[in-house]
Length: 264
Ligand SMILES: Nc1ncnc2c1ncn2[C@@H]1O[C@H](COP(=O)(O)OP(=O)(O)OP(=O)(O)O)[C@@H](O)[C@H]1O
Image (cartoon, rainbow, N blue to C red; front, side, top):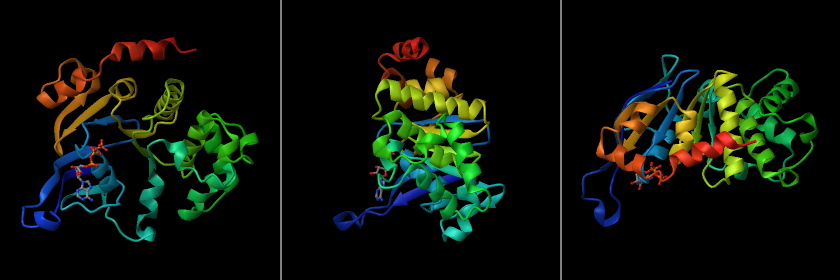
């Protein structure tokens, strides 16, 4: 998938109507292929969620294009986006909280297949997704309230995996999680990249998590890409003021890493 020269401005409202539209994204380009791990970092209001909405074809940019397999991706009816949604799946912030508490795991995993009108051996697809997140078939009859926090996170990720996507767009998937859960989700994502070859765009305020998972990092500030490159290089020698501020705002990056290394 590639995004080229994306731009978006929101017009002012109310008494700000007369003012020129405020750019939220300007000239943003990126590409994600299978096997890529790209961290998208930036302060609050930098434009990360807006960029994700455009990449998910939920919002139309004023400028630029998103393409997938050389086909433009634009918001539109579900039928025109099915192939794209199958290939590019989304993991929301605190994924477990997005699960419908009234559905059992089997229903939760069946829903995306129904919505995307994917034919075939649904049971097989569900079992495959469960296996990829290390859950056993005994979970299928249980509802979210009967599972641990970590198990629910896995179910939520399995929901994104069940249509067999090639790319995952993850929006702060570890924010608000305690350290063991955060590590569970990061371990899982590492497996999805290294074992299954998925590509991941990982949006996060947690730069330690980005350092662990992502080989490339893109820094967004004021709606522009101010820095982009190998994560190690961006962290070791940030070139721009914005990137420097972000990197120095990680108080104990090395401690996080030790904690990860020391985990059982
Ligand atoms: N629908 C909208 N109308 C007007 N302005 C908007 C709208 N959505 C977002 N914005 C503005 O666009 C800018 C970027 O917002 P966005 O949510 O993309 O930032 P973010 O990097 O995801 O921030 P955070 O990390 O705090 O979630 C912000 O200044 C926000 O106020």
